[in-house]
Length: 210
Image (cartoon, rainbow, N blue to C red; front, side):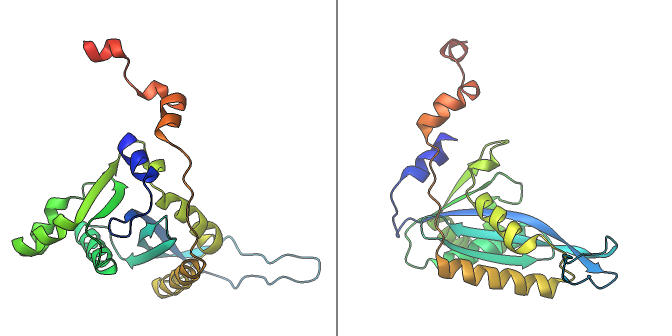
C-alpha cells in the first residue's frame, strides 16, 4: 500500500509516467419492447423485460496526472488481452524511459507472460520499460482507475446497451470527450493518512519481534 501511495506523491515526470490499469465487464442487453419516451408530465420509461446478448470486457488505462485514458473492448479477459493492452501503452509512450503501471494482482497480470507472446529479446525490451505496482488484497481502492470507472458508469454505462458495436461506439465517444477535457485526479490520501486512519492494518512492534 505505502509503495503505491508514495508513487502517487511523486511529481509528474513525462519520462516515467504513472499509468493506472483496470478491467471490468459490461452485460449487453437488448430491449424487448421500445422504451416509452418522455411526455408532458411523465418521464421516459424502460420496460423491465430485456434480452441478454452476452457481455464484453473493458480494459482501461489512464494517466491520472494528465487526464489521458484509453479503453479496449474485448470478448474475454485473458493474459493475451492484458499483453495487448500493455503493448498499446508502450506504443502510446514511445519516449518514456520507464512506464509505471498500477494494477490489481491477478493471475492474468503476469510479466513472465511476455515471453509467451514475444521472442526473448522483445519480451526483455518491454519488461525493461515497465514497472508493475500491484494493489494489495482488498486494496483495489488504491487504483485510481476506479475513479474513472465510476464516472464512466454514471455518464455512459448506466443504461442498457444492446450489442458490442454500440458499446464500442459509446465508450469511444466518452473516451474522446474525457481526453479533450483532460480531467485529472488530485489524489489526497497519503502514507501519513494511512498510518493514522488504517493503523489496524499495520503490525505492532511487538508482533514484528515474534
